[in-house]
Length: 261
Image (cartoon, rainbow, N blue to C red; front, side):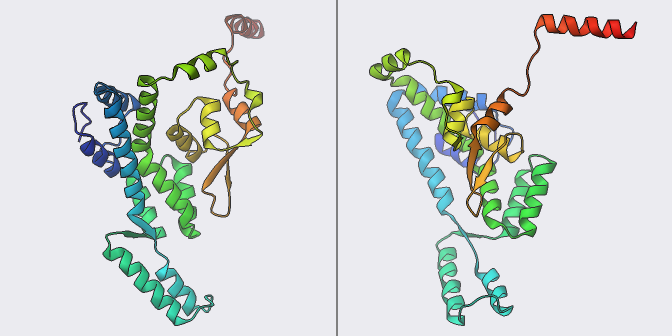
């Protein structure tokens, strides 16, 4: 299915959540939202609500299944619980399945990520290692970033469009008089939102850069789900590829010619 600007939003949401258009570019989403903007602020607000509801519904349709793992631990004597715990856990997960929810295991997540496509070899190695270590939280985070990347990008564009159609005059004057924030004024450590502000990239791009190992980051907590960044590392990454001036280029070429002689 190809994204068309006149497609119903419900069809676009379904397409993005199913990953039916993997090569979709941000300009395609921008064109679609621009078409939505013709309906005014109300149309964009309704679209925002629909997309947010769809993302929440998608997340609620899954749960982390631990029954099989706990059974194995019980058999190996590693689980300090009685058999009634396993029985309760079985009925709890069975009830969720009957409600239409899908139980997530490391095998399910690995297969789902593989189907969506690894970003590169390093990403595949990381996913394979997480699968071998039974790190279901890391796999779930990576799977969500791949599965929801495009619809999160659509959500961000709709929010930007809403800001454009409903500017607050008071804020505009205040922002115009406020000096631009210096990079060194950012805190020494911060999360994804501040990283987006500092670099100018959207969240979806930040997630992709960290997943590929391009942008240095830290994964806080035991499960490593929360991304944190160090100011100096982000600054170094932003200024790593310096473009030389014309004079520097000429000087470098002259030095090469002299060296050849």
